[in-house]
Image 1 (spheres, rainbow, N blue to C red):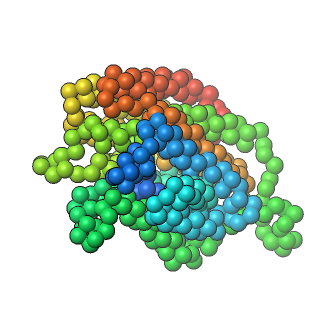
Image 2: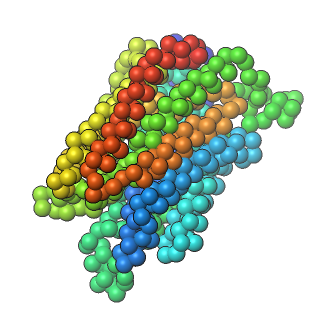
Image 3: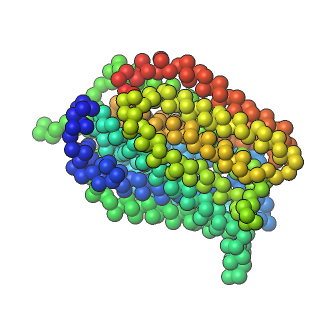
Length: 471
């Protein structure tokens, strides 16, 4: 169907059904939006306190790991969360279908969070393993379901992913506030003491709250299952189709063409640069979390707030900027920047964010620095994120052959996996009492990102040729 035909048709005509009742988008976007919101609440809530829990002493209720060990575990965990997206996508494509995979994944994630309520190394590692497995089933497949709500060429696709991405960030905004308060809030620790409970065990109330968030997501998903009945079935080969069963783009497996392979090549180029982006971006749960806890003055108008609260800044900025970016893309229509140009802008913004950390690191030699340095960094990071992450999700669903959407989404999240491991490795160089070491850490990240920006700009014409007609 041509773009003109789509624009002329009633907005209710979508691949998902005949109702369009969620902000002018297919009806299935609503439940997927809220399911992902609560799943991300559970993930970012746990992640907001993870490295702080590992590096806290036993007397503080933590595990007593040093920074290098904790950063390594953090890197392996966050890598595993995304690495499992590849088998999760394949399982959905050929065994369960994406709809059932999301449900199974959510159940496993909830079990993982509740396992971490108990204080032992065994339950700690088991909980992380369950969360990683469950996220691998849920994360790529819920994004693939969003893509399947739209017919090829539907101009609402990018803005739909931006709305979906805002749901992710509402969950990410609420999580550090709720979980951070339960884990490190002095008033909550006082409440536990008043109830005769050990305040050092407050960490596990935070882990439990993350599990409750995932349960809420599952409730939303099951309650709205009828709205998702037409998307998320497993793929059928032509031999599996009955003679009287119509073939469509979602159920058949045509052979890959030369153009398909070119578009897959474009995805892999984006993949490489996405690794570098997430290697820097994921510092906020690792070295930047430690930076905030040990080197930042977390006082506002006389009120001292828990360091994990600062992690809510990123999703707050995303929520503020998403409507603006969505409107810009919609108004520009065919005049909007191509996906490679948007990616280049994303790399530029995050590179500038880490340039800002160079003077902040130097000032730590004089004591704790203002939290406004991190406010500036997170704002610039979000500017980059809005140009790269939702656009990347949308681009993968547009470039992937229909039979490989789940698999390619798994490949896409593999970039996040490698980037997360890179983040853990880089975080291991964090030293709170050596400002020059911090300058080298954050300055090196900034230099690498800016060089990557230049390279991606030079590769843009080649990427456009590989993408063909896909913008």
